[in-house]
Length: 215
Image (cartoon, rainbow, N blue to C red; front, side, top):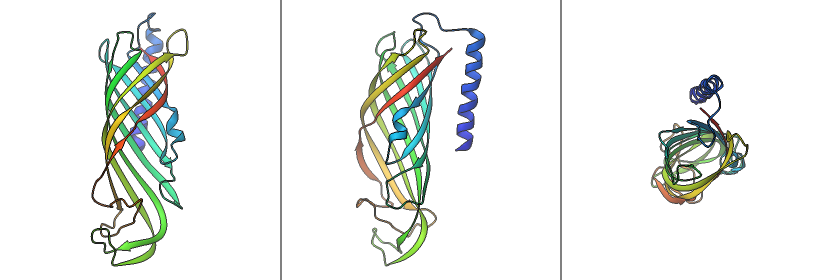
């Protein structure tokens, strides 16, 4: 996880230096790169996260994007001692006009979060039914993967078009797995969801991002 954040930081730094050498984008011309910060990630009480991302223009309307988030707090479980995890979201984006103000995209994501707890833990479970329980410290692990189809708009915040804001929303489907780290026969019930079998649910992705464009 630390390596991923380091690589993203180096890419941002290198691209910013290139923009300073090359100059500003021409009037009305969208930048080749855009870096963004998802404001709503910090307000996500279920899995609060710090999210940074990058967009790379492939043509007048097509782009690829990716976001990397670090999860650092949560109320997903009661009495969590600590939370740590990450989210990766690559996407393919299509702008509906050459001015690149509105877009649709297909976004894929993977989330992995560990919650440290001290509680009664089911042992020797069969179909999530424990043979007995034992009080201990453990890491409850959640993994989620899925795909979203979403649409959004962009608006400039400065006259030079470098700083902007982006809003998006959509629908999706997600597959969730939950287990106890390093203890495959243990189980811990959360919202009556199965531990090891995938739990399928719809998703309603949405977000609000600040955008900084560079050459």
